[in-house]
Image (tube, rainbow, N blue to C red; front, side, top):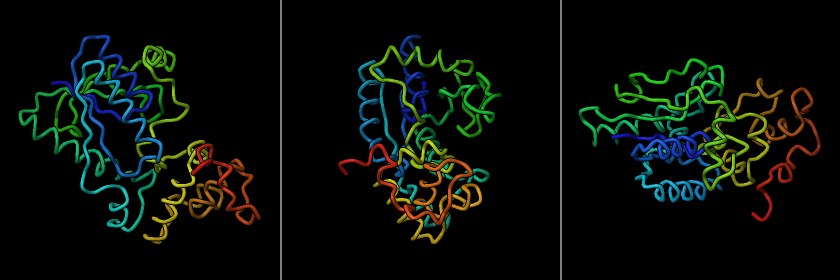
Length: 248
């Protein structure tokens, strides 16, 4: 049994296409974090339809505890140093599912991770035994692929190359200024509401030039590093900063 762990971003689509072109049968598994961008549901549906059309099985795991409740229970947010959200929101639900259907740990888990993505992933190995996946074989077929190699795979699918990473969690604790710029009005509002509920900000002010709270962080992203002033008069004019804000 082969399982493609997918978030339906660029690398996931490339991974699915790679499996198809190499005649590898697999189940494509997506985990619903409850924190996806408002536009992401359609993306997931479209990707699942595409994977099904290629002959793959698809599955969406919907854990009982999702992002919002987890933050409330933890009374705060993860950060770039302590990224406990991934393990709790995705790791445990995935293990619960795969342990149930594969008690002998014979399944092979496949992930579209690539070395060129970041410093943290530059040592990605093509094959390993992963504790994170229940001591199963973990394979990264695209580990040595460049962006161009990956995009070539995507070009043979109905999808274009996204200008951003997967929005399965949006915003992610690792969000860049570019990620903040594309947040919709609704996604900004959901962060603001959760910040008020847990009485903490999701993003640390000292990493964002003093910006405190999601609306100020969005402004920080608009002004650029070193140029943001939290006392600007147009601080809360974030609607125009979001390309998905119109018509909501």
